[in-house]
Length: 362
Image (cartoon, rainbow, N blue to C red; front, side, top):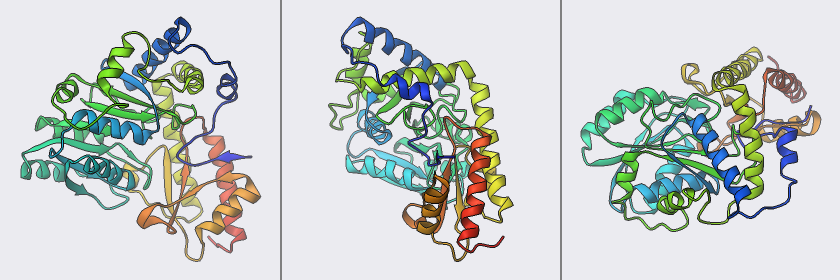
């Protein structure tokens, strides 16, 4: 029954694991060129985009930093739409490089209100870019990105989106929603190990790039574009992770986007219904509840450390706790990537058993 039920890294299928045992190849050679083109095109299929797309070696946070330094200059006004820890992190990265942050924060467990975002843009006409987290793993909330995008684009602003825990699991059509820079990471729904981040770049984003003055070297999109034309990356890539990514992508393409999204919807619903059946309360407003991670309030008298230990040692299932202000108040169950309802059913049986052992009575 061993399961890793956290929002990332996620469990890997056996064929993905096996792929990483292959010997290294020349990352400037023809074999790598063919692999780079194949995985790039398949990621673009999942992104639903014709924009440029780059595979960079680094974590999702690295992709967030790359988006900031390639799009902005010190002193630029940035509207930070935040519904949790990772929205706050995006703002912190921009601030670290000299951007002027205009916060637009919402209550944890709630989604961003497009009308509030609209008012913020009316009140701050000098805003250059808007930062949004599509799926906030700290609270288990998915923003209505289609509605938010309409607002942002009605003001002609640059839209930079953290799609790290949504892309490849929850529908996020980059071109349809006019996302200028969309960021994801291999360790989430892509069924691959940590180590790669993906960024798509629109023409509007390239226009911003041409004027941006924040320092950049390793993350330079211009260098990434130059080398992608040669089917390479500027710097040494994580070759073994790309081996694994290619296998994971083949599985995703075979399943098809609609089926992937429907499976995650089933899994998300099963997790929420399973928690409620145990008398537990969800953190997220169910109208905007995530299909990749569910956040649950700890019942009175139950400590997270005890619950986590019992789940891990007695049932071989790893869950995770809250972050920031929610530390010690909630626990989270990740369900993205290589997962189906049967995994969640097993998790709920274990959760019921662990809670009972700790004295919880439904």
